[in-house]
Length: 96
Ligand code: H2B
Image (cartoon, rainbow, N blue to C red):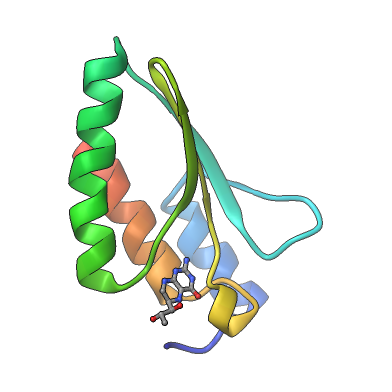
């Protein structure tokens, strides 16, 4: 597991992930993805699940109809790591 990122590293990385926000009070980033319908939302989750398994890094997320709310953090590191950034970037790509 990689080390937790420093604030400077995080600020730089998040500049390239402009749709993601910091979660107040915890070392985590969040984004809500909105799709046209449930089928697209669940398809997104299915594709992301395969990436998450490959990375052995898993999102906190929930789905209601066409929305997927995602929170990323690295529990083992007690902070945000490169794995969170990789998963966030993969999600951006998959969501299109
Ligand atoms: N996912 C996330 N988001 N954070 C972790 O710390 C984490 C994980 N740890 N997936 C992994 C699995 C760990 O529990 C296993 C044992 O590798």
